Length: 134
Image (tube, rainbow, N blue to C red; front, side):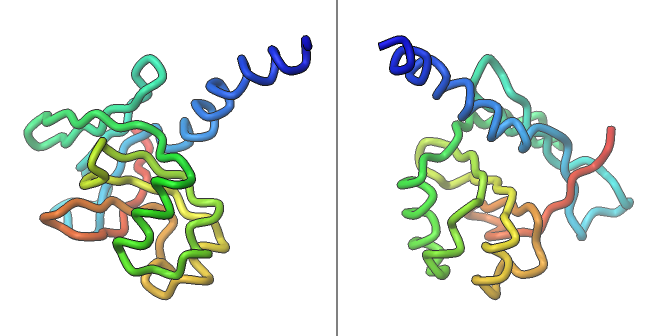
């Protein structure tokens, strides 16, 4: 019984720690200056915020479940197996999604082959992004 209780209590912390790898500042290849910060992902009491630096717009994100990730991959018409090992956070409608891709994802889906991280939104589509040291 103790093992079951411990496991149930540990699951939220494991999910939070796993997606915490998304925390950080990001740029993309089309900024005027190299390493110009475009977005920040911030862990905020177990949920996440995507902050667009240009106008300080804040979008609430959550760690995508396996099913949500698969649905997003299907919407993008990507090889379903490439979703394995990806760590993603997105808004409720999954219109704004940020992911760190596994090596497996990059190998199995040609669209993702040169990306470690991507950001997707309805305006920009899927964009390769890079983490910036602050």
